[in-house]
Length: 278
Image (cartoon, rainbow, N blue to C red):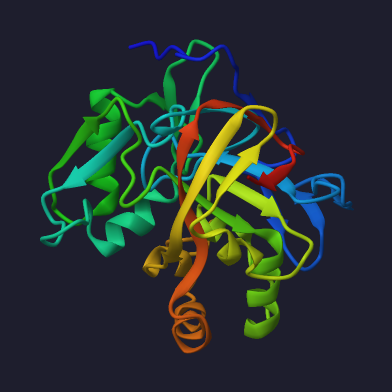
């Protein structure tokens, strides 16, 4: 199944951030398994987009883009697919807690043919709709659950189409927690650079903002956080969940970090694009 863009814009991966790279706030460094360098080139010079993240498969690790398309429904090709488990608790959750940690070990991307490809923890690559991947997930989770794959034309998000958070907010949380935090914990679509101060995105709630030359977003509400942010993006199955982060948010920030938004005017967005309130 080939997925085609409905807008005249293209998505480009960011070569600096991927499955083998980590971007920590508070240090302004990018590091890979081979090199480490400290730089500020990924941050816009004024209010703007620092990074763009897309998650083709819900609950799996995603990909970093230098450019993406915002449609009326959200970031194009974001959360197209989702796995549902027979072991999921009743309600909004699609999979059980331990299954979510297992899914986070897998990463998904859109390949050059427009297909969604999933990379397993062992490095194997599978088309997302393959029976083999489904069987592998059922085997690896060891939960005894039966999985099924769902696909939707619009992003399968829990609340709003887009999530945003600023580097300054994550940096402040890292300071308050007393340890570095990987921005990928928060699974935002748009990582913002808002030099004014931490939690500056909260002031955008109820306002519309232009991103780049065309796209316009309506910032709807602050983002109430769930347990997902406690999982280490690189070792979700072995590292102890960072419950102190949830406690910190509950104690000092009403359990919220970042904001939700919807798209008012579709358009192309690029890392470095300015953001201004209309």
